[in-house]
Image (tube, rainbow, N blue to C red; front, side):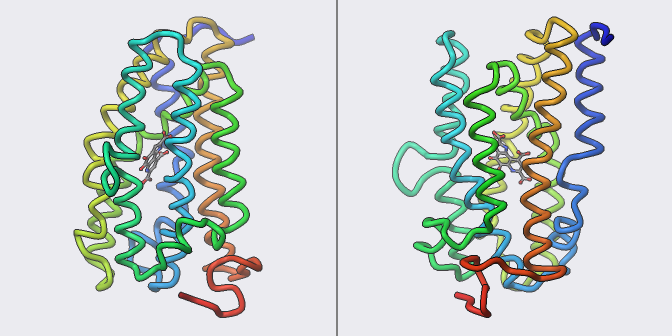
Length: 246
Ligand SMILES: O=C(O)c1cc(C(=O)O)c2c(n1)C(=O)C(=O)c1cc(C(=O)O)[nH]c1-2
C-alpha cells in the first residue's frame, strides 16, 4: 500500500526520477554534445526533433481545451504563443526551422515530416494521445521533464558551438528563448502538481506520467542511435535511406 507523501517528498521523488531517466543521459545526446557526430547525424537529429517541436503546441492546445478554469487556461496558453509566435516567422517552431535551415536541410522536407523515423512519429503521437486522454493532473505532470531541460540546453549549446564548425549562435537561437521559458513553465507545473496530487494514487499517477514522458524522449533518441549510429539501419523513407541525403 502506498502512503501519502508531503508535497516536498513528492517533488523529491519527481526530481529523483528525472535524475535517473531524463534524456540527458542518453548516449546519442552525449555524442551530439561532445562533438562526436558528423553533419548528417546532426541533420537527422534536427529533422526528427522538428516532429516533437511541431506536436508540442498541438498537445498544449488539446490540454487547454480540457481546462475549465480561465486562470489556468490563460497561464497555459502562453506555451502556444511561445511555440507558434504571434505572427508568421515568430516563435519556437520558426526558430527550429532556422536551425534546420542552418544545417542545409530542405525546409519543405522538414515540415512535411515524411523523412522522420517511424519511431519518432509514434513517440510524439503517444505524447499527444496521453495528454488528450489522461486526467488533467497527469497531463500537466507529463510536461515536468522541462524541470531538467535548462541543464541539458546549456550543455548542448556550449558543446555544439565548440565542436561543430557548421553550427553558429544564430542557428541555435531556439535554445536561448527556452532557457527563460522552460523554468517558468516547469515551476508553474510543479507547483500545480504539488497542490493537486492529494491522494497516494494521484501522487503515483503523477510520478508515472513523468516516467512515461521520459520514455517518450528516450525512445526518440534510441531510434536515432539505431538508424544513424549503430547498427546504422535507416528505415525506408527516412532521411539518408539508400544513401539519399539532401
Ligand atoms: O531540448 C530539450 O532537451 C528539450 C526537452 C523538453 C522536454 O524535457 O520535454 C522540451 C524541450 N526541449 C522544448 O524545447 C520544449 O519546447 C518542450 C515542451 C515540452 C513539453 O513537454 O511541453 N517539453 C519540451
